[in-house]
Image 1 (spheres, rainbow, N blue to C red):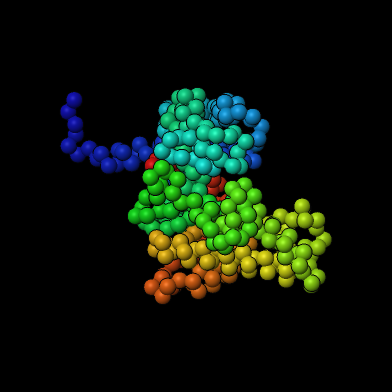
Image 2: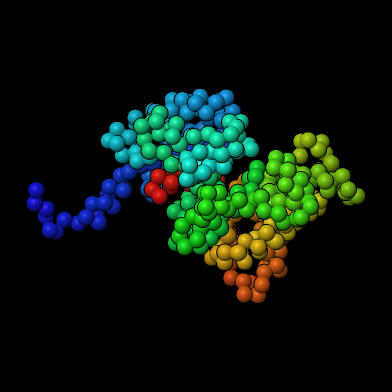
Length: 333
Protein backbone atom coordinates (compact mmCIF):
# COMPACT_ATOMS: atom_id res chain seq x y z
CA UNK A 1 0.00 0.00 0.00
CA UNK A 2 1.37 3.40 -1.00
CA UNK A 3 0.31 6.34 1.19
CA UNK A 4 -0.40 9.68 -0.37
CA UNK A 5 2.29 12.02 1.05
CA UNK A 6 -0.31 14.80 1.08
CA UNK A 7 -2.69 12.77 3.25
CA UNK A 8 -3.68 14.83 6.30
CA UNK A 9 -3.55 12.49 9.29
CA UNK A 10 -4.56 15.22 11.75
CA UNK A 11 -7.72 15.91 9.79
CA UNK A 12 -8.39 12.17 9.51
CA UNK A 13 -8.18 11.54 13.26
CA UNK A 14 -10.18 14.69 13.97
CA UNK A 15 -12.90 13.38 11.69
CA UNK A 16 -12.77 10.00 13.44
CA UNK A 17 -13.29 11.73 16.79
CA UNK A 18 -16.11 13.87 15.42
CA UNK A 19 -18.10 10.76 14.51
CA UNK A 20 -17.45 8.89 17.75
CA UNK A 21 -20.04 8.82 20.51
CA UNK A 22 -20.01 8.03 24.20
CA UNK A 23 -22.63 6.86 26.65
CA UNK A 24 -22.75 8.82 29.89
CA UNK A 25 -24.33 7.29 33.00
CA UNK A 26 -24.79 9.14 36.28
CA UNK A 27 -25.67 6.83 39.17
CA UNK A 28 -27.44 8.57 42.02
CA UNK A 29 -28.93 7.33 45.24
CA UNK A 30 -32.44 8.00 43.94
CA UNK A 31 -32.21 8.12 40.14
CA UNK A 32 -29.80 7.08 37.40
CA UNK A 33 -29.55 9.27 34.30
CA UNK A 34 -28.07 8.10 31.01
CA UNK A 35 -27.60 9.38 27.47
CA UNK A 36 -25.68 9.23 24.20
CA UNK A 37 -23.30 12.18 23.76
CA UNK A 38 -21.11 13.40 20.90
CA UNK A 39 -17.71 15.06 21.31
CA UNK A 40 -19.28 18.55 21.16
CA UNK A 41 -21.28 17.85 24.29
CA UNK A 42 -24.61 17.41 22.53
CA UNK A 43 -26.91 14.84 24.10
CA UNK A 44 -28.51 12.93 21.23
CA UNK A 45 -30.84 10.85 23.37
CA UNK A 46 -31.32 10.37 27.10
CA UNK A 47 -33.41 8.77 29.80
CA UNK A 48 -33.63 8.04 33.50
CA UNK A 49 -34.61 5.22 35.82
CA UNK A 50 -35.01 4.90 39.58
CA UNK A 51 -31.84 3.39 41.04
CA UNK A 52 -33.89 1.99 43.90
CA UNK A 53 -35.82 -0.26 41.49
CA UNK A 54 -32.89 -2.68 41.46
CA UNK A 55 -32.10 -4.59 44.67
CA UNK A 56 -28.77 -5.91 43.35
CA UNK A 57 -26.06 -4.50 41.11
CA UNK A 58 -26.65 -7.36 38.67
CA UNK A 59 -30.30 -6.39 38.35
CA UNK A 60 -29.24 -2.78 37.82
CA UNK A 61 -26.86 -3.70 35.01
CA UNK A 62 -29.55 -5.79 33.31
CA UNK A 63 -32.09 -2.96 33.66
CA UNK A 64 -29.65 -0.39 32.29
CA UNK A 65 -28.84 -2.66 29.33
CA UNK A 66 -32.53 -3.04 28.52
CA UNK A 67 -33.01 0.73 28.47
CA UNK A 68 -29.83 1.62 26.61
CA UNK A 69 -30.02 -1.08 23.93
CA UNK A 70 -32.48 0.87 21.72
CA UNK A 71 -30.14 3.88 21.83
CA UNK A 72 -27.13 1.71 21.01
CA UNK A 73 -28.99 0.16 18.06
CA UNK A 74 -30.02 3.60 16.85
CA UNK A 75 -26.68 5.42 17.12
CA UNK A 76 -24.06 2.70 17.29
CA UNK A 77 -24.66 0.60 14.19
CA UNK A 78 -21.23 1.46 12.76
CA UNK A 79 -19.41 0.75 16.02
CA UNK A 80 -18.93 4.44 16.72
CA UNK A 81 -19.94 4.23 20.40
CA UNK A 82 -16.49 4.16 21.91
CA UNK A 83 -17.34 3.46 25.51
CA UNK A 84 -19.49 3.99 28.57
CA UNK A 85 -18.53 6.52 31.22
CA UNK A 86 -20.04 6.24 34.69
CA UNK A 87 -20.08 8.79 37.47
CA UNK A 88 -21.10 7.36 40.85
CA UNK A 89 -20.76 8.14 44.55
CA UNK A 90 -17.51 6.67 45.89
CA UNK A 91 -16.59 5.55 42.38
CA UNK A 92 -12.88 4.67 42.23
CA UNK A 93 -11.32 5.32 38.83
CA UNK A 94 -8.37 3.02 39.59
CA UNK A 95 -10.39 -0.05 40.57
CA UNK A 96 -13.60 0.44 38.57
CA UNK A 97 -15.54 -0.20 41.77
CA UNK A 98 -18.06 1.73 43.81
CA UNK A 99 -16.56 1.44 47.27
CA UNK A 100 -18.83 1.58 50.32
CA UNK A 101 -21.11 4.37 49.06
CA UNK A 102 -23.25 5.53 52.02
CA UNK A 103 -26.15 6.72 49.87
CA UNK A 104 -26.48 3.65 47.64
CA UNK A 105 -28.29 0.50 48.72
CA UNK A 106 -25.65 -1.80 47.15
CA UNK A 107 -23.27 -2.13 50.06
CA UNK A 108 -19.58 -2.96 50.11
CA UNK A 109 -17.34 -2.95 47.04
CA UNK A 110 -19.29 -3.13 43.77
CA UNK A 111 -17.32 -3.91 40.55
CA UNK A 112 -19.70 -1.92 38.36
CA UNK A 113 -17.29 -1.11 35.48
CA UNK A 114 -16.40 -4.78 34.98
CA UNK A 115 -20.03 -5.90 35.10
CA UNK A 116 -21.19 -3.27 32.60
CA UNK A 117 -18.30 -3.85 30.21
CA UNK A 118 -19.03 -7.59 30.18
CA UNK A 119 -22.76 -7.06 29.65
CA UNK A 120 -22.52 -4.40 26.94
CA UNK A 121 -19.31 -5.63 25.25
CA UNK A 122 -18.17 -2.01 25.31
CA UNK A 123 -15.27 -0.51 27.34
CA UNK A 124 -16.48 1.08 30.57
CA UNK A 125 -14.75 3.75 32.69
CA UNK A 126 -15.82 4.69 36.22
CA UNK A 127 -15.12 7.77 38.29
CA UNK A 128 -16.42 9.56 41.33
CA UNK A 129 -19.50 11.60 40.37
CA UNK A 130 -17.98 14.92 41.44
CA UNK A 131 -14.76 14.22 39.53
CA UNK A 132 -16.87 13.39 36.47
CA UNK A 133 -18.68 16.71 36.88
CA UNK A 134 -15.30 18.50 36.97
CA UNK A 135 -14.34 16.86 33.66
CA UNK A 136 -17.66 17.93 32.19
CA UNK A 137 -17.00 21.50 33.27
CA UNK A 138 -13.46 21.33 31.86
CA UNK A 139 -14.65 20.12 28.47
CA UNK A 140 -17.98 21.89 28.05
CA UNK A 141 -18.48 24.52 30.76
CA UNK A 142 -17.03 27.45 32.70
CA UNK A 143 -13.63 25.77 33.16
CA UNK A 144 -12.96 25.33 29.45
CA UNK A 145 -9.35 26.37 28.86
CA UNK A 146 -8.42 26.30 32.55
CA UNK A 147 -5.63 24.12 33.94
CA UNK A 148 -6.19 24.62 37.66
CA UNK A 149 -9.63 24.77 39.25
CA UNK A 150 -11.81 23.15 41.87
CA UNK A 151 -15.35 21.96 41.25
CA UNK A 152 -17.62 21.86 44.30
CA UNK A 153 -20.95 20.06 43.91
CA UNK A 154 -23.61 21.19 46.35
CA UNK A 155 -26.52 18.77 46.35
CA UNK A 156 -27.80 16.15 48.76
CA UNK A 157 -24.14 15.94 49.76
CA UNK A 158 -21.03 17.98 48.98
CA UNK A 159 -18.56 16.56 46.47
CA UNK A 160 -15.49 17.92 44.74
CA UNK A 161 -13.16 17.46 41.83
CA UNK A 162 -9.71 19.08 41.85
CA UNK A 163 -7.98 19.76 38.55
CA UNK A 164 -4.25 20.49 38.74
CA UNK A 165 -2.20 21.34 35.65
CA UNK A 166 -5.00 20.11 33.41
CA UNK A 167 -5.53 16.73 35.09
CA UNK A 168 -7.69 15.39 37.89
CA UNK A 169 -6.11 14.91 41.28
CA UNK A 170 -6.58 11.27 42.33
CA UNK A 171 -4.08 10.67 45.10
CA UNK A 172 -2.41 7.37 45.95
CA UNK A 173 -5.56 5.21 46.15
CA UNK A 174 -7.80 7.25 43.84
CA UNK A 175 -9.86 8.89 46.60
CA UNK A 176 -8.36 12.39 46.71
CA UNK A 177 -10.68 15.35 46.80
CA UNK A 178 -13.27 14.48 49.45
CA UNK A 179 -13.50 18.14 50.42
CA UNK A 180 -17.10 17.75 51.58
CA UNK A 181 -15.87 15.65 54.51
CA UNK A 182 -13.17 18.08 55.64
CA UNK A 183 -13.83 19.53 59.12
CA UNK A 184 -14.69 23.22 59.03
CA UNK A 185 -16.37 23.45 62.47
CA UNK A 186 -14.35 21.23 64.87
CA UNK A 187 -16.70 19.48 67.29
CA UNK A 188 -19.71 20.80 65.38
CA UNK A 189 -22.78 19.15 63.92
CA UNK A 190 -22.57 15.38 63.62
CA UNK A 191 -22.94 14.05 60.10
CA UNK A 192 -25.98 11.80 59.69
CA UNK A 193 -24.05 9.10 57.80
CA UNK A 194 -20.33 9.29 58.53
CA UNK A 195 -20.52 10.29 62.20
CA UNK A 196 -17.83 12.95 61.66
CA UNK A 197 -18.45 16.24 63.42
CA UNK A 198 -18.37 19.68 61.84
CA UNK A 199 -17.77 18.71 58.21
CA UNK A 200 -18.56 20.95 55.26
CA UNK A 201 -21.25 18.56 54.03
CA UNK A 202 -22.98 18.69 57.42
CA UNK A 203 -23.69 22.38 56.84
CA UNK A 204 -23.54 23.26 53.13
CA UNK A 205 -25.40 20.39 51.47
CA UNK A 206 -29.13 20.55 50.81
CA UNK A 207 -29.56 18.28 53.82
CA UNK A 208 -27.40 20.56 55.95
CA UNK A 209 -29.35 23.65 54.92
CA UNK A 210 -32.62 21.99 55.96
CA UNK A 211 -31.10 21.06 59.35
CA UNK A 212 -29.89 24.64 59.86
CA UNK A 213 -33.36 25.96 59.07
CA UNK A 214 -34.96 23.65 61.62
CA UNK A 215 -32.42 24.66 64.27
CA UNK A 216 -32.88 28.37 63.63
CA UNK A 217 -36.66 28.06 63.53
CA UNK A 218 -36.70 26.62 67.05
CA UNK A 219 -34.83 29.63 68.44
CA UNK A 220 -36.56 32.26 66.29
CA UNK A 221 -38.34 35.07 68.10
CA UNK A 222 -39.49 36.81 64.92
CA UNK A 223 -42.25 35.67 62.60
CA UNK A 224 -41.06 33.39 59.81
CA UNK A 225 -42.71 31.51 56.98
CA UNK A 226 -40.76 28.45 58.08
CA UNK A 227 -43.10 28.10 61.06
CA UNK A 228 -45.81 27.08 58.60
CA UNK A 229 -43.97 23.77 58.07
CA UNK A 230 -43.37 20.78 60.32
CA UNK A 231 -39.68 20.19 60.93
CA UNK A 232 -39.72 16.90 59.00
CA UNK A 233 -41.15 18.65 55.92
CA UNK A 234 -38.56 21.43 55.69
CA UNK A 235 -36.20 21.04 52.72
CA UNK A 236 -33.62 23.31 51.15
CA UNK A 237 -36.18 24.01 48.39
CA UNK A 238 -38.67 25.30 50.96
CA UNK A 239 -35.95 27.43 52.58
CA UNK A 240 -35.16 28.91 49.16
CA UNK A 241 -38.80 29.62 48.41
CA UNK A 242 -39.23 31.37 51.77
CA UNK A 243 -36.07 33.41 51.21
CA UNK A 244 -37.24 34.61 47.79
CA UNK A 245 -40.45 35.80 49.46
CA UNK A 246 -38.36 38.01 51.72
CA UNK A 247 -38.39 35.83 54.83
CA UNK A 248 -35.63 37.14 57.11
CA UNK A 249 -34.92 33.85 58.85
CA UNK A 250 -34.64 31.92 55.57
CA UNK A 251 -32.16 34.56 54.34
CA UNK A 252 -30.24 34.14 57.60
CA UNK A 253 -29.96 30.41 56.88
CA UNK A 254 -28.22 31.20 53.58
CA UNK A 255 -25.96 33.81 55.20
CA UNK A 256 -24.84 31.22 57.75
CA UNK A 257 -24.39 28.53 55.08
CA UNK A 258 -22.49 30.90 52.78
CA UNK A 259 -20.19 31.96 55.59
CA UNK A 260 -19.19 28.38 56.35
CA UNK A 261 -18.79 27.59 52.65
CA UNK A 262 -16.60 30.67 52.15
CA UNK A 263 -14.33 29.74 55.05
CA UNK A 264 -13.87 26.27 53.59
CA UNK A 265 -13.18 27.67 50.12
CA UNK A 266 -10.47 29.91 51.56
CA UNK A 267 -8.73 26.80 52.89
CA UNK A 268 -9.03 25.12 49.50
CA UNK A 269 -7.62 28.19 47.72
CA UNK A 270 -4.56 28.31 49.97
CA UNK A 271 -4.07 24.58 49.45
CA UNK A 272 -3.99 24.52 45.64
CA UNK A 273 -4.08 28.15 44.38
CA UNK A 274 -6.66 27.50 41.63
CA UNK A 275 -7.67 29.88 38.89
CA UNK A 276 -11.30 29.40 39.85
CA UNK A 277 -13.67 27.56 42.13
CA UNK A 278 -16.83 26.49 40.34
CA UNK A 279 -20.01 25.71 42.26
CA UNK A 280 -22.49 23.22 40.86
CA UNK A 281 -25.63 21.41 42.03
CA UNK A 282 -29.18 22.02 43.14
CA UNK A 283 -28.16 24.26 46.06
CA UNK A 284 -26.68 26.92 43.74
CA UNK A 285 -30.16 27.75 42.50
CA UNK A 286 -30.17 30.07 45.52
CA UNK A 287 -27.88 32.34 43.48
CA UNK A 288 -26.67 35.47 45.26
CA UNK A 289 -28.34 34.40 48.50
CA UNK A 290 -25.49 31.89 48.76
CA UNK A 291 -22.82 33.41 46.53
CA UNK A 292 -22.55 36.83 48.19
CA UNK A 293 -21.87 35.61 51.76
CA UNK A 294 -19.63 32.82 50.43
CA UNK A 295 -17.49 35.23 48.40
CA UNK A 296 -17.27 37.68 51.30
CA UNK A 297 -16.21 35.02 53.79
CA UNK A 298 -13.72 33.49 51.37
CA UNK A 299 -11.93 36.78 50.79
CA UNK A 300 -11.92 37.63 54.51
CA UNK A 301 -10.11 34.39 55.36
CA UNK A 302 -7.43 34.51 52.66
CA UNK A 303 -3.83 35.58 53.01
CA UNK A 304 -3.19 38.80 51.10
CA UNK A 305 -1.27 36.82 48.45
CA UNK A 306 -4.50 35.09 47.44
CA UNK A 307 -7.03 37.91 47.87
CA UNK A 308 -8.96 38.80 44.70
CA UNK A 309 -6.96 36.23 42.74
CA UNK A 310 -9.50 33.41 42.46
CA UNK A 311 -12.79 33.51 40.57
CA UNK A 312 -15.83 32.09 42.34
CA UNK A 313 -18.24 30.99 39.61
CA UNK A 314 -21.44 29.08 39.10
CA UNK A 315 -21.35 26.19 36.65
CA UNK A 316 -22.30 26.95 33.05
CA UNK A 317 -23.62 23.45 32.42
CA UNK A 318 -27.35 22.89 32.26
CA UNK A 319 -28.26 21.25 35.53
CA UNK A 320 -30.38 18.57 33.87
CA UNK A 321 -27.60 17.61 31.43
CA UNK A 322 -24.45 18.06 33.48
CA UNK A 323 -24.36 14.60 35.06
CA UNK A 324 -24.61 12.82 31.70
CA UNK A 325 -22.05 15.13 30.07
CA UNK A 326 -19.59 14.73 32.91
CA UNK A 327 -19.82 10.94 32.79
CA UNK A 328 -19.48 10.85 29.00
CA UNK A 329 -16.18 12.78 29.06
CA UNK A 330 -14.58 9.84 30.89
CA UNK A 331 -14.65 7.88 27.63
CA UNK A 332 -12.44 10.44 25.88
CA UNK A 333 -10.05 10.73 28.82
